[in-house]
Image: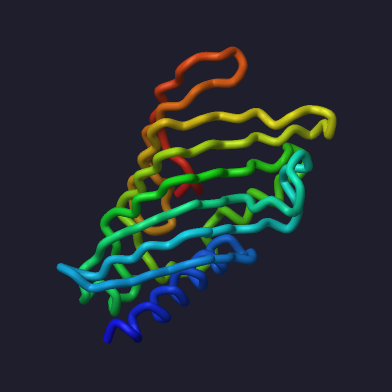
Length: 184
């Protein structure tokens, strides 16, 4: 049973994210084990856009990069459509926001297909957002995020968020709450 669960789950994660963002997705590692439900742990998740959002870094940078993630779900949930997961824990998250002159890159964040995995909550640690400038001579603005929590408000609807981050200019702490994602 476990030998079949890992490739099924890996395929669902990659297919769901590829369809959701209409882009190339890479997942370096995914390990699954059963103990009081199905546990999954992944490393090296990258979601790419059509263009390189950050010219300051070597190579093509992903729009979203996740160092590690893990979650637990009930065995029955693996076979539901969509598969249900209560909480995904994410460590080492980077979002590369493209320059303002490339709005079509962010258009792929809008849902267009029925999702194969439904997640209720995301909890992030060691996260950052890089806002890339239109001017190639300007460095990206880097927002370090000490705590970020996203909660589902329903399929195809924006996620409710709560975040604690550091504003780079002027330097200061921000405690922010609101919605992230497409408008209903």
